[in-house]
Length: 241
Image (cartoon, rainbow, N blue to C red; front, side):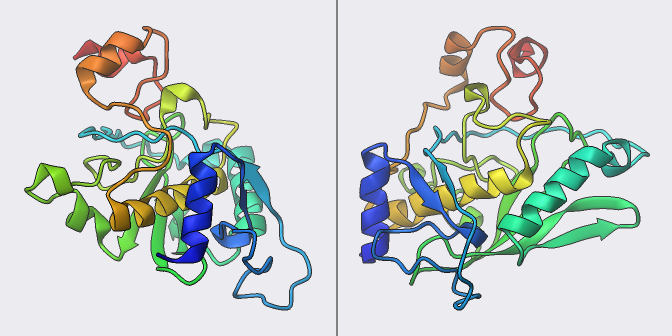
């Protein structure tokens, strides 16, 4: 096993804070403290966060089309997202369709010396308040590890639309209007570390929660955020089913 991955995994298991550098690189103590694309850069912004509880399940957000682009209706939110992305994920690029900002795309290599992943972070039609979605476009780990017929080999933390489940929305690890896409990419980096370790050992090392709908209904209060990521009250979303 890659030594950087082993060291990071041990820190996650102990509940330690994880240092995330520019571009989503998660640092081990013996890792070089610079981003590989900018080896001479003297300083790199860092953010220390604890791994949130991961969550996965067969849930799909429904979307309603709005004629006014979200970034036109919420210019301040868009500006903050853009500033944070330029500062923390400078190699990601905007996806646009006319006036509509659809999302961001770029690559992440969360662990030095291991796989590089091509990522799409996109704003769903019901954003806000629904959270942006993160998909791994290459390699195709959704198809390989989620759609397999053998339940024991399925990846535990995907939504059915192919987006990753990097945190449990009722925990309020990310909130609409406060959290940014860059924050979600931080979570995606941690999720990918969990994926790389799970791929080698079959163990999910990050905190997680049972995604059985009946169990979730038993622990969520009516006004808690819904587990599907819509950021509607549970009673007005999946709690009605």
